[in-house]
Length: 366
Image 1 (spheres, rainbow, N blue to C red):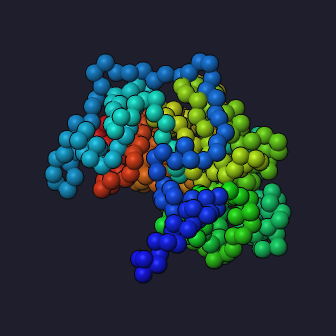
Image 2: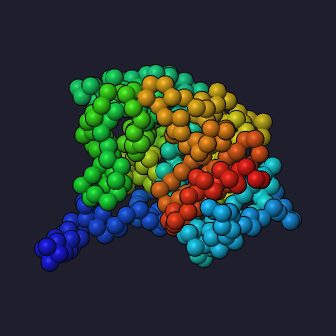
Image 3: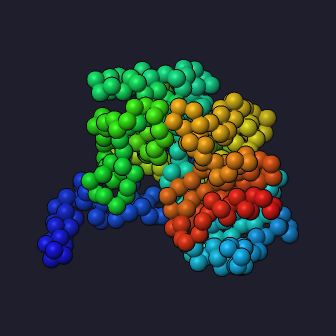
């Protein structure tokens, strides 16, 4: 069987380099260097950046107690494939460390943390009247889906991932939807082929497909402006990001941003996304996104099929008010408003660590 399978893989790699199956076998699973593999649009940083203060003697993370056993934090983080760990409290960096030859200027893909950034952009578009309401049917923006019954799905269903649309969130299947969206070169066409599994609002099911449909809705709402340009105008520059960044797209010509993933940036700039929500959408006196949107995005709602731990493309690790953005290889922007605390963890992999538990525990002790 192996002898039969190997030539198929070789054939695919050699003869089908332009197709998503070929790229799947070449790249073989999401990787921290994936920002180099895809076409992208540049996010330009402003001339003047916002800088967090740096504590002279910060409150370092020294030890973790896991199942009754103490672990030196630095070693534990390194052993579990961490490349960056940043703790900011009261706008001051208390702890900042990098591993595996990474530094504060190293680019790391957001992976699904981009879903939370997308949610902010949807909120801003609603604030500006570009999108009327989360209760709008998605076919108001993607009318070509009407023939498939998608008029039953509204924008809020996508935000809550209760759309009922069939989408297999597996990166191990080269023929599945996740591989098509991640490695494919025509996201608009891929969206047009999606089908229903259950009725909208029946249950929550984590789906990058829902986030990508949201991206197409936002693109239609913006008209000629690209999503990258909108992110730059509304967030990247107003928040004083320190570095240029990028957003991966499906193809060079007329490309669509991969809104379910793939904002490529640095740890300190990711932390500023957390600071924006920590301050209820306000940035140094300017309301970037409405306070009401932030509150809705971070409060528990279990109606219409929603789960308490997932709200408007943000994760809620506990029921005590903290929230976070999360990416597949263990990328996190964790926010604890009660402690005025932001934690960013970026990694090559999750490792064997339960980062939900670790981040929540750090939120309690800081």
